[in-house]
Image (tube, rainbow, N blue to C red; front, side, top):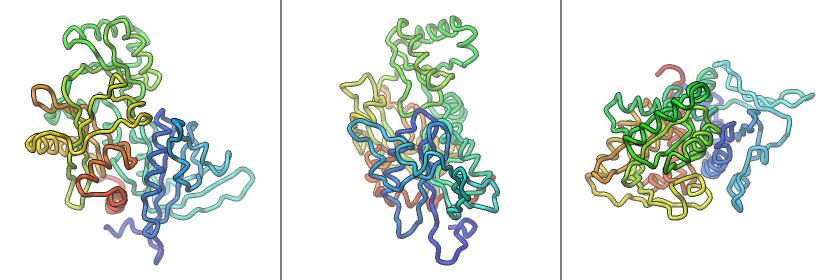
Length: 382
């Protein structure tokens, strides 16, 4: 571990700020993920400071009670349920020489909560996973878990993610993008272009928010009659929309984790078809607990190939820390990369931790390795 990022106070444990919630539609999943991480962090090794970001963007001091951060009776938790005050706010200095976190309330003297040595950002989607929070932490000079500014942004935007992969020679499926101005000014031209895309590649199509996650806002469209509603549903989450053709085959995922000697790939997982859903959507992932098969029932040669491609995708997007890479194994026996997630679902039953559990890295060790990797890295250009 580099001495640059270690705490300077003699005998003090490194303080980890777990930041979660946020302004995106994936707010609740972020809360669930953070609860799992808070349970797993070794309190004998680290001090922990939970910081929740409300849906309106307020940074709040929250209770350290992971049991209140789970899905209960199909109800999703929120940061507002966990805050210690409806008005108090947490402020992180953007002075690289000062890592103090300050808590303020109206009419009260600001309270210094102490220095933060590393941030574990458990945010999913825009305003957290997309490079915005990472940029703030770079300005503040605070190390953090996971991808940097560029790779976070690339990993969030499905269009530019695919463009990067193509430039590095990685196999990508057919897609089209509907940009905000095009849909607002000339929707008929956009529809005509997507109809032409369907004529070339066939129905059904998958219409998605270009910068979304957790399968929110995605619609499987079987014919032209459902196209416009699907685009509007995607635009509720993101004004930029991506349309993808159906790839016939199996969904296979692979985890990548940064070790001291570089990134390594986990055993892969197979996501079997879900019988009660059209595809692996939000309900199937988080509410109905659809589960994958780990390790995936594929040949040793296919396992080696997907591991190679997963690490190549990690490197192509200049990722750090962790990535879950999602592929289709087509009926022709070829792997096509669908997307990467720079902050994947991270509860113990999520696919990324399950793949690493099967690879010999348990959940608590996984959390510790990510924190240690963040502490080893310098902030700034690297």
